[in-house]
Image (cartoon, rainbow, N blue to C red):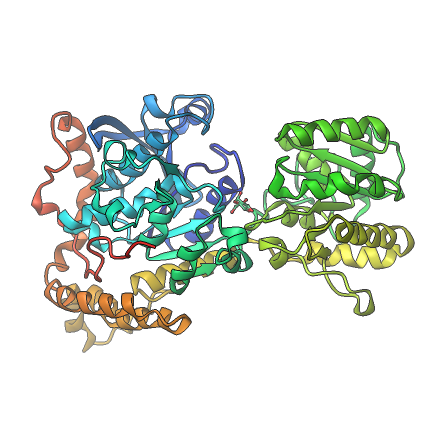
Length: 596
Ligand code: GLC
């Protein structure tokens, strides 16, 4: 299975949030399970500076975005069994930050366009392109648009992961043609239009073959107005292709037994080091050296959906409990000012750092006893998983991935791996914080068992990678794991001769089953019937052209070089027809979903 993973950030190259952690770990986990994986990222200035010695220049080409005709360089690097590609354009990406520029729409419009147009230069022709959030939301749209004219794009299936639906890539209607180079039909049928604006995420949700939220609970929440930022109707409509796959964490990187960033290493079997890390954290943050007072840690962007209003509301009640507090993060001024003021009021018991600091965050994960995440909404959340791995017991609100990863402590049967509350209410949060603090102080053995359960949770990527492979298998109609090689007997030899059919046959066979599957989820027969119909004939027709299809893979090395050299004058439409990539298509031509 050939997967191209397109993202706007990935660890260790560039990071502003959780997406980077996911994009940094999932591809390698997919590769470890046998998939052929490449990742494509913009070549930001930061990446160029830090990794220039490891980057290999592949080629360059020109990419058309509406009337713009721009240079696009292609660099690559091999890492953990994955090919990492970087698309270079200094006008767009040679800037100190990743986002926050007034032309972000154009920058990521270019990036998405380039992902599609640079495909012939990659080492494989992908079967699936997996996109993430609004920055790459145009990829499934461009693929559909190009498929109308160029057959080779019809074989590619798309998966869209939503990490946070709040950010949708909304732009004025006039950007459709002039900026993104799309025909007005995309707006007329409503596919890409929402509340009068161009809405890239909405377009991608409708166009992608599968949509995925980063936790099962978030997938459900996205169908509700409270969480969906006006896209709940679209999400409900696309329920038949929606799934929720919980993120994992990089368990090698986040390992208290080996982490070089923390003062003293420890493991579930020997927790002495954690006590030392606690003393270290207290020293570092100017807190009193009190070994038997639990430290409640917060590592978070200081923004409203992280539930910080609740903390502000009951902070004084919290500080009446025998606890210490550590807060690390930056964000909205009102929270920054409030927490700084509070830290002065409770000096020695509460410490605040308005910063984004990897080193300090690890000191908190290791040194704190409890980890507070009262989010209003949380698509997945990685911090609670990291905290658990370091034996820091989470206190979370039951939303999104927090609900899926933290099960509430039940004293009567000694179960659970943290503390949870359901209502978005300061009093409910305070109630469980009190429960946690007194369990720590009065029942240290029970607390130690709870902590051990948290540490024993498996948040590795292997499980999630398996679920993604299942999604890829559903959209491509290819079985995963791949069907066993048939046992070679004398009689089977001639069968091998007719190999060209071999690729198309399973795809065709599984196509109806795949189409039928979503229908069981929700009575949404329209796409199923249509897809089945339109796929039936072309698929049969194209069984023959499918045979030469393997060639491009073998050819691409050389192909990659030549166009690069003489591409300057060539416009995008001038591809040689010999380059046809044909896979049995399954009714993907054109945009099919009507407007909301
Ligand atoms: C976003 C979400 C966060 C999630 C991360 C990775 O940052 O807000 O909850 O864990 O993406 O998917």
